[in-house]
Figure 1 (cartoon, rainbow, N blue to C red):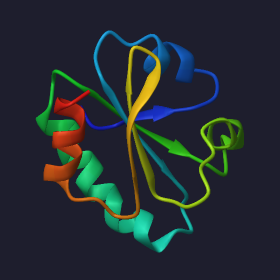
Figure 2 (figure 1 turned 90 degrees about the vertical axis):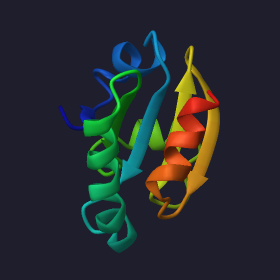
Figure 3 (figure 1 turned 45 degrees about the vertical axis):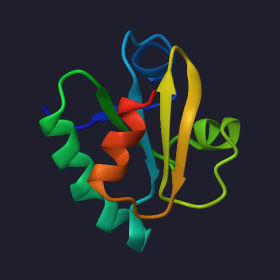
Figure 4 (figure 1 turned 90 degrees about the horizontal axis):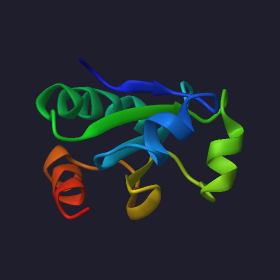
Length: 104
């Protein structure tokens, strides 16, 4: 299935109202580390069905980045029941991301 493209228009429904934990990758097209993180996110999204995985382009959706005080990218947030329950900044390996989701 791949990662869901998250925008300011669908963020509330796809993330904050989700029935399961959601991993959100905040990234930008010009960001080198984000390009390294991207394939890891897509691979994880294809492997897990009990969690949602989405990506937010911070240049197209600055309000989301601002709301969650994102200062560096990639920033990875895990949401559960509308709340941020875990956060990682910088390129993060798949096993660490899966662990963050499982603890949500």
